[in-house]
Amino acid sequence: MNNKLLILSIAVLSLTACKKEAPKQEGPKPYPVVNVEAKNIIGYQTFPATIQGRVNNDVRAKIQGYITQVLVDEGQYVTKGQPLFRLETNILNENAAASKAGIGAAESNIAAVQAAVNAANVEVNKLKPLVQKNIISNVQLQTAQANLAQAQAQLQQAKAAKSQAVANYKGVEANIEYSIIRAPISGVIGKLPLKVGSLVGPTDQTPLTTISDTSQIYAYFSMNEKEYFDFLEKSLGASMPEKIKNLPMVELQLANGSLYPEKGRIEAVTGQIDPTTGTIQFRVGFTNAQKLLSNGNSGTIRFPQHYDNVLVVPESATYEQQGIVYVYKVEKDTAKNVVIDVIERIDNMALVKSGVNKGETIIAAGIGGLKPGTAVKPKPIKMDSLVQSIKPKF
Image 1 (cartoon, rainbow, N blue to C red):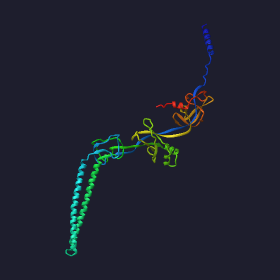
Image 2: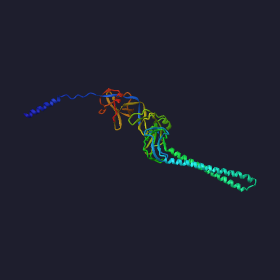
Image 3: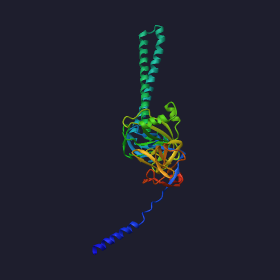
Image 4: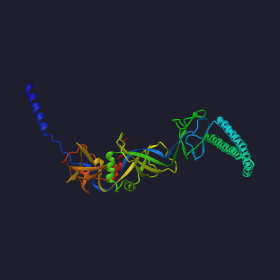
């Protein structure tokens, strides 16, 4: 009896379960959609850059000596010819006094020899008429003439000795002047590694300081060979000077991410590939009237690339499989995946060469679990609002 009751209960439960309704299928899921647009887009190719002043001049001592005064400070702006350092001049002053005394001695010697020349000349003039009148022999006149020639030679030697003494004195004076080390150019003082009491000289490897003329600065960046040849192909002009002339102005992004307010122009390209790095270097000139940039700063050159009337879709609308990029078109409220050829990705947009046409409707976001052929409920949104709402992640 118990077994019969159990079997009867199971049968009743089975019939009850069968009477339950099957779950209802959900309708099409809503997805945001946008229309493919054609826009004028500016993208930027970026290159790390190092910044240098227009002129960077190492300051070195022309003579050897101990620093007695440091007349400037690091970061100070100086003008050409301004004193920077003083070296001790005790020995130089003594040498100058000795050289000046040598000039005096040479002048006294010239005076004495000049007197001997005058006397010898008088003697010759006195003997000439006597020889002509045969009062004395010609031998005496010849002897007097020889004495005159000797005195004149000694006078020339004395004058040469004075010239040498004057040259020595001027050399010492120049060295005394060199003991005041002056700015060779106008600019900003760099590091001052040597202090008062340091012995310096013209052969030192370490300069006293470096002065940078930063009224204009140069930013240097490099391209690899592929980038360089792409640059040559895309740039207008038959020769390198023409290509450089036709290049657009570039921007400088500073180390803190901000843009330098002035744009720069590419002025020169080195003539050869660096064999160690496989790169070629470019030089960009920027004005620096406000002295915001310093020698040794770093930054990033932003080279503009203009895309006119190019098709764009949101990056969030794209997905990739095995290196192929797809988007979902919406046709008759159904998702259809299509392959697109992406030129570049800029500001949360994918620039498309082929695969979609202007005005076609595509699913803009949320395509992670979407499958081809899925029924969708389109919810139109503005592309600009979508791409602007996406914040970069760092």
